[in-house]
Image (cartoon, rainbow, N blue to C red; front, side, top):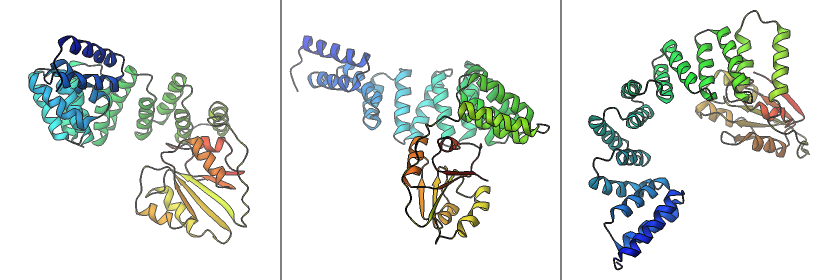
Length: 368
């Protein structure tokens, strides 16, 4: 260990604090470690090192450093919150819960701790405890949009749809920039059969989110559920939305020419698992004439199950594109030389209609 020169330590700490303040956490960490090499128990350097590790996302290293600090500063609420989050991120959720609960006995109204505990319990499927935390949070902060949103999701787990809707509506009123909340309210209105109210909701929120293609798709999908709409109006609305949202991707020249004798057909879907779409789709794949067709599937669904495995065995090429961008998918379809591209999703959730708007194949079909 080097000599403890107070002036040198002070200068090093100043460098470390400056780096930390401007968000240069790698430099801050190195400077704090340098101070600790000269003064092993320097409280400012110990604090800075622990906080730098946290901000660098090095949670495994942050945990022992924060624990060491916690022994020195057991009354620090901020320190408990950082340690609890680090423990959660390193898979020690139970210890994180214990810390937060212990803290809330001493500081029962701490909004951050209540939120952190509620979210942790929610993610573990402990909905009763999560509900208690978010209800307590709302007592301290009645207009906390995140707490309202989580309570809405918890109520959905218990199929209390009307109550959930009220929470989501209030959350959206407090956070009107959230397209996710806007979609959640519309989905719930559809779920409870309030179809015309859902349609009016979509029209209203589309004014607030004029460039959100997901809401536009939801609006067009909702038209299927509303009685009394003239077919001409429905068609006109699809054309109007296409003019506003149909340019998500730039249309490019078609890709490589397929010189094979076989016709290449590609199916794009997020429902290639046990789902109503697959009940209709599986026989189509099963009876394709593979002497004349090469069959590609582009799957972007969140699930893989036994049905997925069966479908995979029926095609020439299977591509999981769930994490790929629409631009990447469009380019891949062109590279694969697909001649007929079939959309199986329409305007239902998570579609890839922008890929079709970009004319990714010479023949494109909407089905199912």
